Length: 395
Ligand code: NIG
Image (tube, rainbow, N blue to C red; front, side):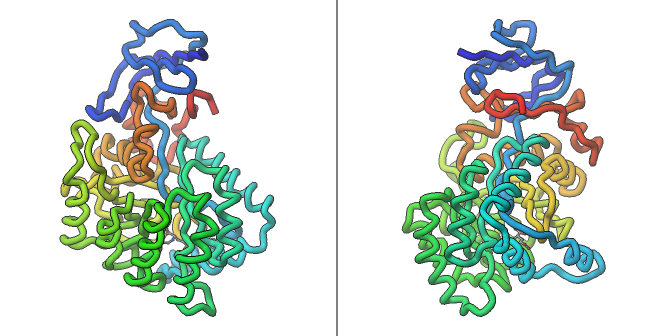
């Protein structure tokens, strides 16, 4: 049995149900899983030992929303936006065209590079989506090549209605032949329910088709204005609704109601729909930041994710997202860390495996070049990732 002891941890943020933060701690890893946690003075012997020099350790980030399968760059669109133009979903077509020109190898290399980049910044579990294919062959190609490169894969054929298509006909394609072709490769089905993308009725058809296939769902909702996305996600029991910038009281109540069967103190019961906040995207599109504070106060479980994509959020830096959530969304440091780890794991249905440092869970650890995790927001913009362990292996 391979054992590794990480010792001399100045501060260990476990993100367990009790929110335990230990000082002068050690973590024993056995065959890639956490086997023991406690004060370093009482640590068991191990085959190999690494002294972390008093640094802070927290769970690896669980980034539950990204769009890594793309070619090209939209810096010009970004510059225009910073000069006052507003974001519209139409830019997705620019990326679709650039992506379609890449060979399988070129596209897979780009995705793998992006995944490595995120891992080096502490993201040990990463979801990504298709959605820049928007044609049967392309969405299938992206699903097949994306599958081995990330930890969770989401089918987002319903990202934009491609030029020349009638929206209902395209929804037929998404819910029929496309879904049939990608179902074996994907964990979730998602739909961009927004003005300029898919209507409530079309979104409902996508979610219904996913349910009939036994696939879990997600919704891009309430990003650019109020809309039916949140309520649809709750109605369909989706794992998450993402963006959530424009919420009314009914949206908050619907989300809170979905968590009625969940016991936060023990983390048992029936999980509801996670509200996934994407602060880097909100900044890059100059949208109001998602109301993370109000969501938490209403009893909703939230996630923080990067939404790395070339249009609205070209960063996979979760340290930045956490800092922004603390500095600008009124979250405490502990709440932001939990949202970016355990919250992401809930949004992906993998909270039994990752998202906290607990015995039996995968040993995904993020070591900071800082004595305490508070430095993530106290020293914003600094490169604070010292090292990363995924399933017990140093990256
Ligand atoms: O999550 N909202 C829809 N999809 C992406 C943006 C895609 C793009 O503009 O390329 C997002 O923000």
